[in-house]
Image 1 (tube, helix red, strand yellow):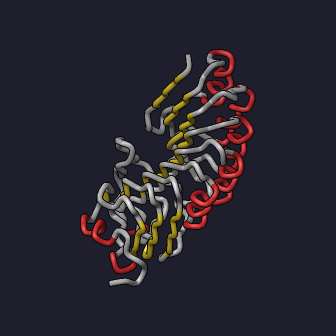
Image 2: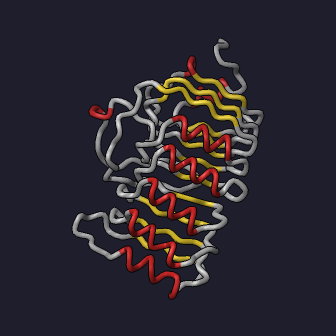
Length: 256
């Protein structure tokens, strides 16, 4: 078996022993290359068990909705995996420090990084990832940079990128983010960038010559006057949220 996908119920009564499950993967699936687990029971202890599983051949690792996962889980991942091409830790509680560990561990292999619904990540972590991961083609940070949390509706949030919908009815523990954050993204190979629901962003500059998909859905504090892009493929670029954003592709910051 080279690929395994496990999606557990999001009910609080769900009690699968993920530590034992992870530990047994090395014996039952020694050739595993793609692993996806969706569970609110994911924790640092469960991810740590991956180290003993000796799954060094993993190329794609998706561990989502685990709000108990912190930077300690990232440390276990970088010790367990040698050459990840895709890493999805959406719904976790990792911070900018965890993003830094990811950048140091997989600079020559990682092309897709998904960190949606990670409230402890700031613009510093996002900018570090785009600066230190030269092969990055897809990045999803939806709902990670949010302001006015007390006014936001609770429910199912979704981001559209890479053709899939994310339903996250239970959000991880929230860290108070700075109300207004400026984000600068410069990358030579990035093709898809999702910032859906990042209401803390009030200024954005994107310089990505290969960009063809930009999701700014419900970035409620971001306005065209405070945003600019340098996207040579602007005619091919799909911008979700406000169609008029395509009009300011290739605009310089502060230009009319």
